[in-house]
Length: 639
Image (cartoon, rainbow, N blue to C red; front, side):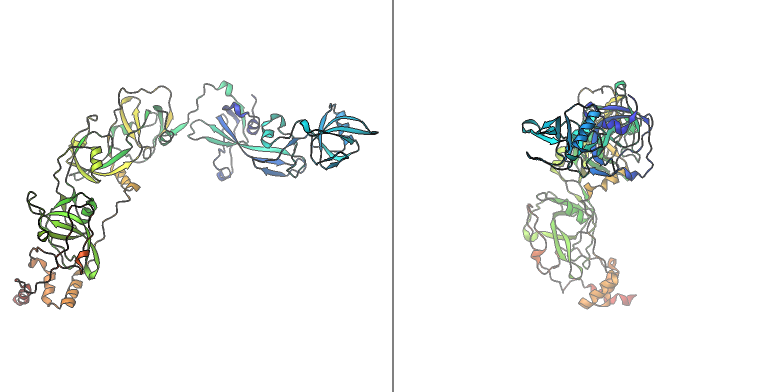
């Protein structure tokens, strides 16, 4: 095939013959703005190979041959076109017959008039096709015997040769639609007429969009047919040519197969590594891989080690087969205790350090000693500084020994209020020694959860999790992974997340080797610290709100002013506030009266076994056996 322009090739192309392979004989470089042809290929180099897979009609321009004016038509234009034999019109029928005789044309011929023709038989509308069959005498006048219409609706007319036009000679055949004209190679570059358009004669100029595949192009290339390039059809001699089309792992995941899929790496995304795994260093350009499909199950668990100065972070597959045992959770604040409380599940903790209550900042807060056992009941509200409501955690003090009777009479129970911002230190009291599978553990207990791996995964001999004192299962991540193996080591399979490690690959030839039995997939991957914190910032963790902001401290000066104005105490009380360590406060067994209506102290916790009782109102004891004020009055005199 001789080289032709891309426009001529596309216009003459039969869509049924696709795909076609073309070679660019004369390249083109588009020097204008890239925004002038958005989404299309603007440059082709000489020698490039193009595999045309689809041709789409974009728009059609019609042109007036006489004036050069153009008009754009939509691809779904509904008008009908009739081809003309030429751009010339004839003034009378006699001129039309004479021109046909001189050009050696045989009757019948087709023609039309641009004006309405009125006869005794009927009126012929303008631009209505007529067929001139013969010239004969009719009632003493030389007439043209014409046929109007087709099929059974034909009407015979005798028009005198002196009938005025103008007349246009038409090519034989019925009127055609726009698509029929464009698909007929015989009508290409033919002068047409259309009653729906203002011009009597016109030519059509279609513009197509060519979809093609090119070497090492990841996506389908779109080329406008008007690009000034010459091409040659080499389909017959290009059966051995294979077009390498790059593919992202995310695209392989989206199209869903077919699997297994042999591939070769073309490009590895730049950036810091996400896993601390030996197979990660093998992912380089030229490495052959085999993609076996989507990993199952599709969820993973984010875990961090406990008891180490520098924690390590892991992503554990939902198919992990190791055995785990629950560990007591640690809670640094009362807010963490409230977040861990679940309806219907009692939560008992032990205080890990001594804490003294501050009646001015935290009214109603009782002192705690290391080893005190508490049961968390729920949240409530109490009147704080300046008579403002503050959120508190309501707890119940339990007996010192877990074996003693813990459900005493209501009047003997002691309730404690802890501000949510209180940073004490608590550890969960846990008596569960069962061994759980990962799936059972997650189904029964909410995350985060403290565990100890007591038996490693038998399918993973190098399981590192049992070597740690404890793990904190932090979050469940729903993310699809692909099961991949190296072509050189099909026995070692690993799971790659296309969202975070989107390799560019190309399909390779050959049949992949299928391991016998289930795929030996590594269920535990260690994360780099940078990638771990990247995950912590992902939308999956946005629901974890920060702890409440503690109330603003007013300072010692504000405390002294409030005490002196409210109670009229002596200056020695200011000294007591400045030096609290000189006079230790005794441990109290009751709560202060912190609200006006004690029945609104807290909300009931649904599903809890024990109800909450109102706090006993306590009045200040004016006859305290330890009169610290009297001692302080004499204390400055000894200085």
